[in-house]
Amino acid sequence: MKRTLIVVATAATALAATGLAIAKGLDSNVNARAVSGSFAATSASKVQTRTCTTTDGKTLVTTNGVYTGTASGDADLTGAATLRAHSTINTTDNIGVVSGTLRIDVASGRDTQAQFDTVFSGGQIAGLAVGHAHAPATRLVANLSAGFTASGGFTDGKLGASAGGAAVELGPGRCRATAPVKQRSEARGTVSAVSSSSITVAGLTCAVPASLQSRVAKLTVDSRAEIHCTLVNGTNTLTDAKGRH
Image (cartoon, rainbow, N blue to C red; front, side):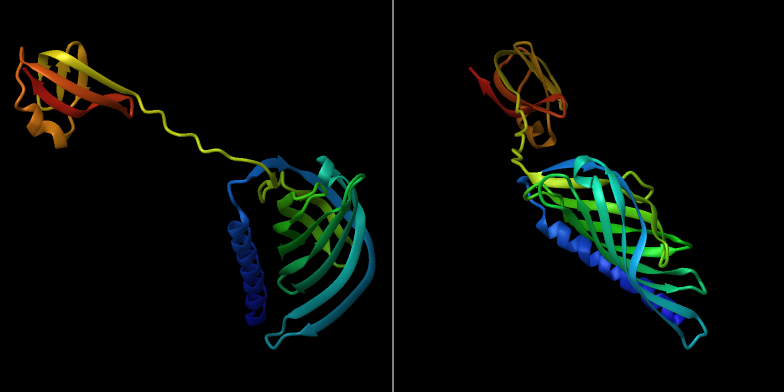
């Protein structure tokens, strides 16, 4: 069991490191769009397997292999698929990790390629694939899931559109921040109503914040005043007030 825990922890560490690298690479000059695809790669070749028994009596099977098939979905995820996979599976407890590379031969442009790291449990894998789409300067970040056996390859594979989550392409783009709209108003004239919470001058009513209550307290009904207000969370709020003669 001790060896099993080490295997799973290694996969978790790899996924965490990949996520950190992605986060550092993001900036505001990109555009993100959702993509999805499915794949199957059941033609196995160059499969090499090694089996050993751990000190706690578990059977550990390590396999390297190349698996080919087809992928379909968004244009960048459609074409002949080749997965080179390395798997380490505790077959006693049916758990382990599967990692490797994925290449999709897209009809035009360069291939879509990604590295993936997944956790294997009960014949299923789920994890993250990170690489690039065939379009220049377009990155691919996708949740990947599939059925897997070392001898039979990948079945019912999904890039995005799965229980594990979605997939996105990050391409060049420009993102301009939207400045908040500030609405200001002001009035000069007779004070028709005033309290610690609001003031009305020449028909304009504004809420009084705590910081201006002492200044508003000096103003009285029928006196003359000048007030300045701004819209805060949908409410005209006083920003300045002074008496006028």
